[in-house]
Length: 164
Image (cartoon, rainbow, N blue to C red; front, side, top):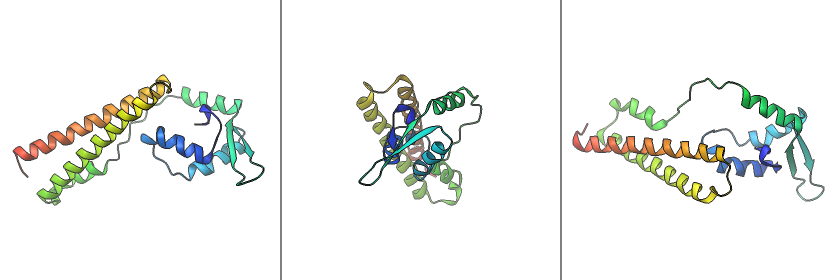
């Protein structure tokens, strides 16, 4: 995130929340701990505000940009991990009531529709300022959410035709 410009840990948290936080979950504490570790490794610099709250601002170094480039060049062969509580509950649905299954499907449909709608709004807000690769990640997120939204909609229709 520092490759986009210097930031405090709080600013990093804001950037992540609007961008990669949509598809890469991690503890917010990492945004406070990791910059100090990267500074100690020489991958970022740290400047501390003289007065006030003594905020620390981090900036990527040339060595940090090289490490980022090396990481980007590494093969990415691992499987995508899907951790969806709705799917997990559906898997164990044999132990649920028909009302629980219907509620699950309705809630998941609404959730994915809302997230996809949010991505549509986000795209409209950032299209003029985001780079091509950021827009591609948003496009995949939108496609994913619309596909999963449609799955739950189809499942709701199936439950209407053939109740459990």
